[in-house]
Structure formats: C-alpha cells, structure tokens
Image 1 (cartoon, rainbow, N blue to C red):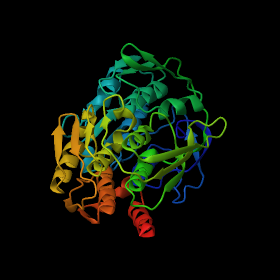
Image 2 (tube, helix red, strand yellow):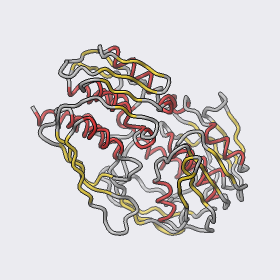
Image 3 (tube, rainbow, N blue to C red):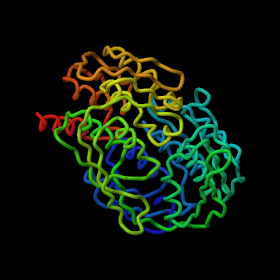
Image 4 (tube, rainbow, N blue to C red):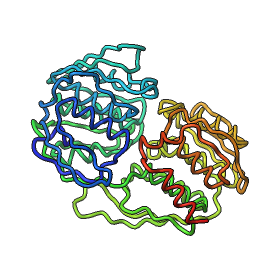
Length: 413
C-alpha cells in the first residue's frame, strides 16, 4: 500500500524475515524505493510511486516462499501497464495460482504459464483500466480477496468478492486507511466485500505493524503446555478479531488466557498484550466457521491436541492442503511417526491426546516453517526427543525462533 501511495509513508515494526524480504525485493524490481528492512523493526520511509507508477522489471520477480507476496502483487500488477514474470522456490512453485489468475483474467489481465499449469513461474500481462468483477470465491481466502481488491485499485474498476465466510480483513482496513473505501457485510451467500468507487490516488501511511498472532501462537502454546514457566506475555500483538480464534481455542482447551487491550485511538488495527499461563489441557473441536481465523495455527492446534486429554478434531480445513506443504498429510504423518494416534481426514485431522508422555522421533518439515515450529514446540514440551530435519526454515516468518524457544525453556528449567 505504501508503494502504491502518492507521498512518503512511515512504517515501523516490519518483520525482518524471508517473506517480507522477498516482497520488498519484488517491489524494488518494480521500481519502488523500499529501504533495507531493519532487524530491530525501527521506522523506514517508503516513497510511493502512485497507482500508475509500477515499472516493468528487468528480470524475474523472485518471491521466494511468499505466497501472500506473490498473490497480492499479481493483483497489483494485473491493473498496471506492464508485464512481469513471477517465480519462487520449490515450495511456492507447488502452490496453486489459478484461484487468483482465474478472477484476474476475467478482469482483463493475461497470464502465461511458463511451466506446469496453475503453478509458478507465470508471466503476467497487466492492463490499466480493467473490467469490473463480481467474484464468488469458493474458499474464504484473504489472499484471493486481496488480489482482486488490489487489481480493482490499480485497474480503477469496481471489484466485489463474496466468500463462504469472512476471511482476514487486514487489506480492507488498510484500504480505508489510505482513502480507498471498501464496504464489507454479511449476505445470504456468506461475506461480501465491495470496492465500489476506486480513487485516482491513495494517501501515504503512518503505520506501526503489530506483532503477528500467528507467530505469537507458538510461544503461547509453549506456555499453555507448561514448558515456559508460570506465564508468558506477548506485548503489542495484533488483536484483529479475524485473527484471534487461536486464543478461543486455548481457552476451550483449558489454558489460562488474559488479554489486555492497548489499542491507540484511531488505530487501523487493534493491539494489546496476551498472557498465557499453563493448565491441564483437554481436547476440543475446530470446525469450518473457525478455520479462516486460525488457518496458520491449525498445525499447532493438532500438536496441542497430542498433549491434551481426550480427542481433538479439526474439520473444514481442506485449505491446509494448499499451503507450503500439504499440512494435513504432513502433520498426520509426523504425529503418527512419533507414536501419537491420529486419523487423517479429507478436510482435517482427529488427534487422540496422550498427556504426560515423552515423544521421540524424527520430523520431516517439508520446507514448511509452521510445521517445523509446531513440532519444535512439541519437542520442547515433551522432553526434547524430537529432531526436525529443517529447523532453520522457521526464518521465513520468525527469525530467531529457536533462540527464543531455547531461552524460554532454559529459563523454565
């Protein structure tokens, strides 16, 4: 949004991680002056190029492992007068892209598969002044919704998206913050988001990025399992209600959870502190209505289920099969290999808990950062007998994760 604005945006709290670096690198290739992202989250200034200001890159846009960066930038490029080739690592190349390219094609952009159909690499031919679109999305996906909204913004056209249920709304909040009003409301078909009157220009941002709930969840789970002492507090974490279902799950499982709201007046995103204290955990059920609000935390819910009393059932989560790995199969295989009783469903998992049991074995992460971190938490909570084949993949979204995990568990000891 800062790149597409007219003027200088002030942004602090950006993650110094693989996905953010890949997205920033792609924006630089498109002609945007994005400074080096500081390790400490300090403020940077981004000089926006305007809605018509993206320029054709001289080479391939390498998005690394970032599915979000890829799909959102495809939307922005779709409404721009340029062509660009999108590519990524082996994991990103395995992820489906038709869910984005299909609606963007209907708006007038063109896509050429340079390899396997529905996969990267893809050559995108943008077109200014796109056609309007009413899209009924078969999945509740913030990435699909955001790509269409961004195409409507750069392509100066109406864009309406209906989802089966509400997905994360960070993009809608950001649109409103820069002067691109969107309307969101419930409908008979689920949840509808409308960009009715795209502006000719958007305003720069003054934005402090809150801590990420999906990353905080790993430390909160460690606390709930009693492996990090009497309590863990995560300060200034995002409390967006489309992202906090993991806290609801922790409460249902019996953890002691306290939330302290610290949202400043006029803030784009709600923020606060989250405190978790250990307690005996019990199994729970997560269904389709909750899944969009904790899609990235579901491997962690399964891991908690392995340590809880009774059964934990996850359903309505077929979207997990289209992430960095097939997370349903990956989690089921790894839990089973550690001796946990687990049933793999087409759209989820059923995990039989075995609280208090030491778990040992090797885990294959399949280059998936969230799988690696979830099983690292399980290992730390059950005797450190679990070996991860690729622990450093955590750096995609959480640089320093293992150092922090070790510090919390060592302090507890």
